[in-house]
Length: 199
Image 1 (spheres, rainbow, N blue to C red):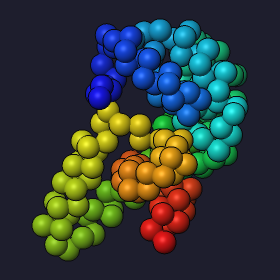
Image 2: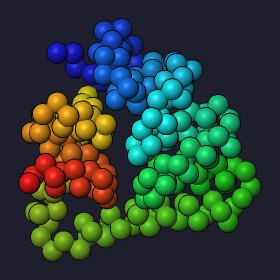
Image 3: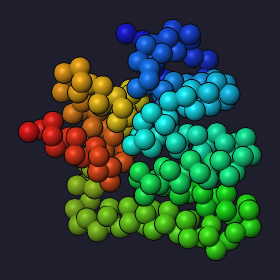
Image 4: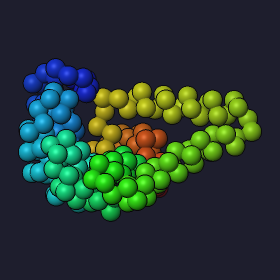
């Protein structure tokens, strides 16, 4: 089995593996092309498939990022706002929207988005600081890092979870849900899927 990574210089065989899983693997495939510096190819894939997965925020987030890099801020904002319609607390989308508004001179609007990012960061710090037992905090951080490390190179997306479920790989789907929740602890759709898989 080919190990997938996001390093530059991806082999054509890695791309071929992802193409076999289209359309479900479209965001991952676009990410591979971005890592190779092939922005237009990534954009083409995202435009072709993102609307087919209206509940999947990653496709819209990536479209927003690419359009921002192409200096098409209106299109970037449209896709970033679509991302927020799915996950209102999507920190990367909130931060990029704030950045775009700041660059456009709309400072009050920019601050409102960036403030949400700051509040989320503070909340994360408070959760760890209020734990009375430092050993528990350390163990929790190590567990998170371990799961993140295991998630590297995998298709850690809701689309892949659904693919595993459809193929009857419930154990793999559960593991992937757990890994996604480490990265996105407030992802209610993944929580729901995991609950259904555990029943």
